[in-house]
Image (cartoon, rainbow, N blue to C red; front, top):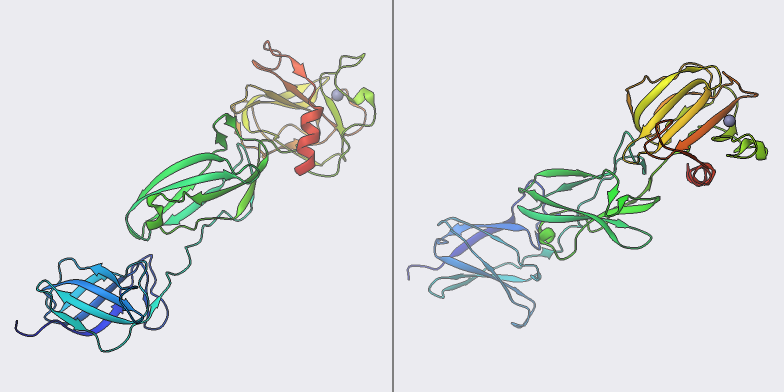
Length: 344
Ligand SMILES: [Zn+2]
């Protein structure tokens, strides 16, 4: 055999989403390139690791050229000497030891800046993945409280490609309730080849937002509550006039207008619920119009005392499907309001 393979240099080959380790090290699982001569017949590269054959691992070589071959550092490779083996069994040990570094830490999972999200809100929780290799990854959304997988996505990507997944808030039984959640790449899926971290930051997701965006009182007396002798259809909650009012749940504006009792008011048909949300006595005409789509948290107006009202307050109603004076019925919103008030 005229000469064996001769390697003159080995280097990590930088890839778009696979940075090389610092220094001259090769990275486990990363692509490396050998330059030299007589490489055309090389079929294997053995990473000898330490003394003895017990920790030897082999990288297969595909389509080498005479002066250049490319292969991937085996996951179990250790620092040490490297041997090129050609198809005839000819071996050529490289003169210098090579350092093999652990694969760099899994890439980051970026969650949009603020970590509180509401169903139907303007922003959705999202995660961005960068593929370290072409393939498919399964991304899961976990409930931090129960550890249950709420939702899964299959992401196909080419090397270096970036994909973003966003969650609309739906789970196996409809809209997920208040809780802490987190995206992760499913363990054991081919995701090992997609460079997204196995755990991301957790975020809060809530199904509603408390509608009064400032200091408030949920009601001073029984007469502020639902029902009672006066068959009150909602909850009266007090705040300074001018305090911002936001949609507790986004949806479609059913009515926005003026009524001599309700004052300036708005009725919103909540997305996906069939529940109507009613806001009354606003200081000025609602900042949304009939037919508009609004998102959870969008400004509707301000606390006021228009119509038949004593003191600045929000009269808030919730109606079951099919809605406000359309065959639905008003129900006591206070338990929900207390809940929303506790976190938002
Ligand atoms: Zn009232």
